Image (cartoon, rainbow, N blue to C red; front, side, top):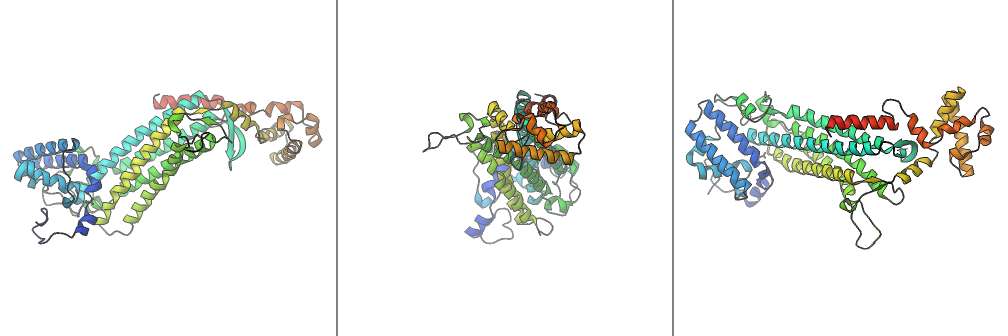
Length: 460
Ligand code: ARG
């Protein structure tokens, strides 16, 4: 038997290898619910416009409802010979709805159908990711509120730079995730136009109402150009680009969790829930979940790159190349969702070792900038000169094996005789963070205020 859908033109069966390379049902069955929703909207519009009869519309809709429950019950048999989800459903519709089924594909093509399904799917994913990112932001803001005045070293070049608070550090990620959510929401706005009714590429001679189908599927409007409607995959690329940046943010935090968990840092504890032991080394507690989140940009950025390469140089309009969009999209969005879930769990779970953090913050001359600022403020020194004097004092402390607050006043005065005992008031890490009250700075009062503001914004 030749292909049921285009048997009129074809006399022979495809080769086995043709079927294998051509079929997408192995992965696009994931679009079943979107495909049925699209068909329902299409058939209702066809009936409303008098293109098919009300009675055929009723039969098709009842058939689609039956197929929908067969699929969700796992009772549907997917066939590779039927290539993809669109033809699997249409063929089954013939069995359950009879001849009426043949009218469903009027004024439609798989080209507009497949891209409508994918837009609906990606839109749902974006909404779900947004909810998850909201949850992660809330978890971070709660921790930040709890630990607004826990002092830790702030790093540049992974070298101790200046003391900061743990809450401030966590709120930095809340900001990054806010931008991720805003990028996803931008992508969603542009994505929310309906390709259905573009048909194969040129539109159709039937008097369809594209606004009606767009509205029924929750789109803001129909896509304005039929060629663009079937050829465009920007909505996937944009979503994967936003997903890639987000995955990179999560990966950076994951790397910090890995570092902070080492005995050398020992800044945080993670419970058994998010760590594993070693099969040979009994002392180990490995941050596997964090390591896997750290790795996820590999495949997510990989998916973006793969799809950019698929799209590059494709002439208008649809080409089968574009079938390759789906596995990349599914894999990237599944993995981002999993990474966010794991990260949220870890943030809820982690506890700072406040003594270790504080001790580390006090090491490494972390208040050297405060000393230089004191020279500027109290002695009226130009900052460049103050920097130089402070450098000599750090070298002296280093030679004596002490930290800045332990340097004797007489030693300091041997470098700059105008220094007074008041200088010690700025050399402690508490005083240092407390003084960073500039907008966006790390002072605990700022951090508590910001954490509260975020919690209010996030509704938790
Ligand atoms: N399975 C196809 C895809 O995912 C559906 C569109 C097929 N269209 C065509 N003209 N062969 O892209």
